[in-house]
Length: 499
Image 1: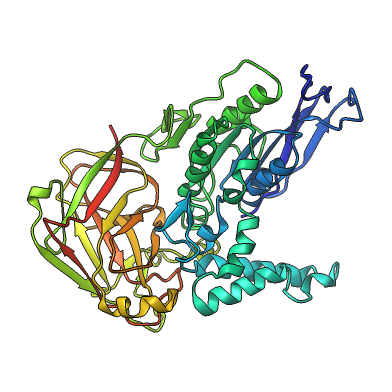
Image 2 (image 1 turned 60 degrees about the vertical axis):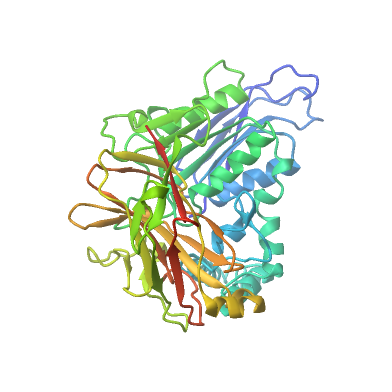
């Protein structure tokens, strides 16, 4: 899940502002981004001016190997370009998301904290502690205090497990290791690559970094690839055929490999070659042979397409016009006691254990969620980006306890299903959006997971608001809630679609 960043250097070019630079650099990357550490071979001559110590440098790596690029570029101006893969924008959002109350990017307000993503935090600490025990004979100090972690990390985990949400101390820790909090210090061309199949660092994280760079005029491109941290034995683990050669042997024969090479050639060698579109995304329904280029759609910028609007109607309908809204309501409640009544995914288990078919299918227990569906679609629609929901909740129980802090605030888990004519449901890459509502008496704006998905003609879209999820820390208090469909105060659901 974490991959060290590799560095690539380029020959010198004349530049009075940068000084004289290293010449004749060649990079060979063995292994691969997802496979762990590789062998880096650098063939160079010498520095024209050793006193400058300023070679032409690019960095590439995934997960932690992506984030360390931002940290390095923020403090070392010798770095010239970055290619971060499947990494985060703000770790507070990654490990305890709240898909509302955003202040910037995916950073939410300190006063309205998110919900612990237990499936991933438990995995990280389990793997980290086990690694510390295995390496104790080499470095016993790793297991003193917080085993194999900095002390603040163990304190943050204990807080999350106890409260279910991060506190200001946790924010202090996550803020200092998240590019979303020092993005203005990174000013070099960056090619962001993020995974569509990733419940740890989802597409919203790369989109937040992309928008931050664009707002400041930093050269940036973004590609949404097929693979990420999720998947595994029963899932889609690893790159799609012809997408990216993770062995490092035939990088230029793949779509992303060639784009990465061209990116480095352009920014490290001054080769006049195109760096590709500003935004590209993989479509898993497109058939191809050889390179994955035909499966990628491209655009001159992000976001793409237009917003299709639906309105909550009656007790369970999504209608396309305000005039079609029928009054109605739907109510549900969580079981309380922290118990989960819905299941979306447990990536840590699914990626490491072979499980019987169907045992990891998402489900929602009747009475613990609300749902609204469209009529069968007349034509196929392609969703690219994040759906949104503007809605009001009616929960006297939460209204009475929310002033006491996050533990008394309403929790909701929003998700979008693709429902086939035979009733089969698909939760795209098992992505959901946890929400903690700061004030249940006010309208709430929710950003659902960004996806790339084609909904076929005859299928329906189903919006679900669940009270719990097995991958997260759930409310201990019982929180009955109702959503009313009203022609005068319509709840609006929008979906980003491309033609």
